[in-house]
Image (cartoon, rainbow, N blue to C red; front, top):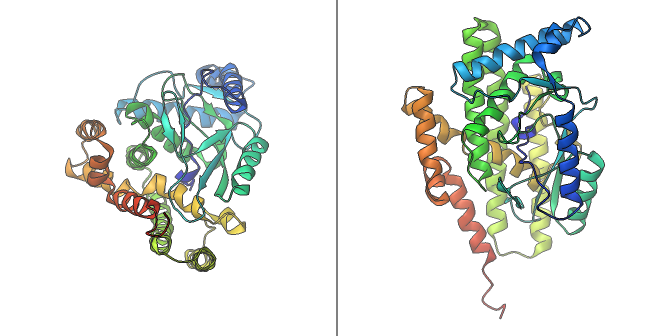
Amino acid sequence: MLTESRILLVGLILAVLPGCYVLQAAHGEAQLLEQRRPIMKLIGNPKTAPSLRLTLEYVVAARDFASRELGLPDNGSYRSYVDLRRAYVVWNVVATPEFSLKPKQWCFPIVGCVAYRGYFSEHGARKFAAGLSAKGLDTIVDGVPAYSTLGRFADPVLSTMLPYGTDEVAAIIFHELAHQLIYVESDSSFNEAFATTVQAEGLKRWLTAMGRTEDLRRYRAADERQLEYIRLFRGRREELRQLYALDLPEPQVRARKLAVFAALAADMRALERRQGVPSPYHEWLDGELNNAALASVATYYDCVPGFERMLRSVNGDLPRFYADVRALSHLPQVERDARVCPAHTAEAEQTALSARPSPDSG
């Protein structure tokens, strides 16, 4: 199952900002939009490979279901296709301070501040991450199969989405359309958790509507396996949060931090053996298991239980759920967090505490 920590939300960065980053983003987006081909024309083209035609027919059905049954935007998004001829559309950089679980923020027009920075070139992403690492930050670089322009453009289905299977393509479409429905500027955790909740609920309803009982059972089993990793990460994050709040010499904190991550890696390998399937986070075990990795997962999952409670409170009525989430989105962040993500309030309090000068710092 595709991990949602690999699904990137990128607002289009227009040329109102200076620098090479904006130029590569604008160039990459322009190239992508230029390559779009209407899905219905591809389906009707006898030169289209039969396997691709079947996949695109499935995409059309899922896209229509998204608007008709899930109440998601009915527009030109995910009604065209682009063959990128590479593994990922963008590469996502996430970074945190050495002794913090709070991700660094980058601020842009339209989307506000977000907890990641995307590059259309893997080389560009790794070069940027290397610069941050040289400054002492924890970083990860993650390949991303899809992103959204929040409805500013008609986003296409990408070839990078297809290797994960048709059901994951449907899930990605539900996720990205949820961002178009409700998006709160400068609150990545709120946005991603809402979209992740809609994605999961949408896929369950989609499989049920198609009468695919066995596939639904497999999806639920995969979801539970994923949640075991999330619970594991949450426990180790709390351990690290408490460690970083202590007034200890840096070398001692650093040594204890390494011990926590070594224990986490051992836990992940044990969980992988017990589950009997490859871990969705196996790449992190090869050298990128750090604060930034845990922060990336937290962005997508910390607030999901709160949104799930909201959905249950209206007995699964999606229009009422969307209305409640939209009302919540207008509240100050501290109130939003208190409703759906109380863990963030605790993190914010700890960050403020650790930022205070010591009594003898002058």
